[in-house]
Length: 296
Ligand code: G1P
Image (cartoon, rainbow, N blue to C red; front, side, top):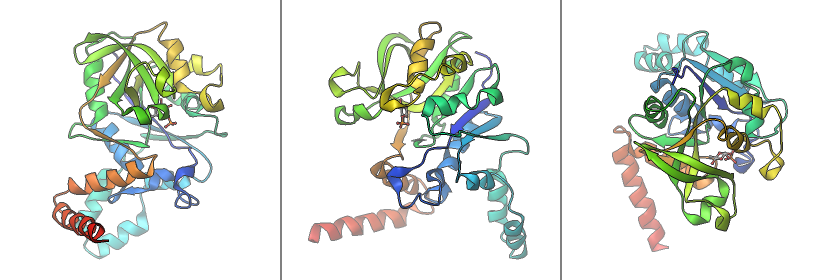
């Protein structure tokens, strides 16, 4: 496959599940430990070699653009106070000048529509798509694993990260049907967006990381409404799968659906426990809280 240089981050969602926290602040800026969700996901893309970061934003999301810019007043204050490690960390987090693009999804018409809004910025090359609701905790990151696997298949292949999900949560995701294995990948025979439990083709759900061919944009242009009345990416992928190969990768690592409160809280605990500077204290606090609950 051609090198994957560009990644789309759809960040236009309203975050209604996190109200009132998301009334004035985008959900993508909610912190997991001390980094906003979107920063974790951009880090994963940078680690995978992505060179251009395309954000599909909406109204009230300007702070995301500010987050990926310099903050001179803050930098000056840190410099005056000799806070060198903090200054260095801020500089390292920042994508290089000219490597970010922002476009707006003017109406909340669904994930498929958000991806379509990035068509001019992506152009005619395969690209990565990362949904910032989903965090994958793994030293190499999920997208790196996908791009490595993409090298083992043809030029026109599409890849989706998938994982096993308990039956009671299946209806919340896209679900795939499993075909022939290809090394670490397997070919995808079916895709269904948010099926009823008894209609799901397997227990493997789509995890929010994709490597897609640009032909998806032509299919999304038809703007057909699917599950929930939204323009679904999965529906366009189903059509693309009749023309191009689609593969699933059961990636290594733990995923957290930060679009749900429990997933978001679990991510905070897991990421804190992975930090040597925080883990001992957090472990102690968790034990104290759990112990206190037992006594109630
Ligand atoms: C989207 C996709 C779905 C996928 C999910 C992963 O759904 O449409 O196929 O399984 O992300 O989080 P959403 O969570 O936007 O409803």
